Image (cartoon, rainbow, N blue to C red; front, side, top):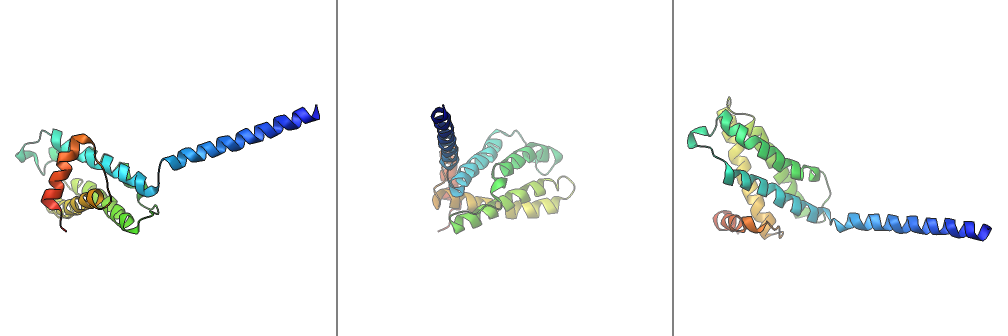
Length: 167
């Protein structure tokens, strides 16, 4: 009887150890911080590209409350995809620096939209600097760090490379 009880306890402990190991394996299967960030950055960027592709704003709508209402939810969703990486330690220090810069720029873009419609010059100052940074970061993520985008956005990514990439 004692041997059966000891065998049962040993079996339960072995099962617990195996299950814990499997759970930890799943976590590592998600990838490194660098890999998870690249996936999140891709998803973040595609949110904005989708917004741009599908907005129905006229030129007269830009810099108005309508512009803010159209873009603010997409900008907030874009930031939300990557915000968790703001203070994480990356394996690649260069990627970490770019990631932090990108996250800050996305926050600045949200802040810029919140200037509308009352503070046009505040909006323009933040928006222009922010978009330049984001554009540079998209190119770096894709062409220096191997970020992939969905098939739907391959042409857009190539356009970014052809238009904005500086060597």
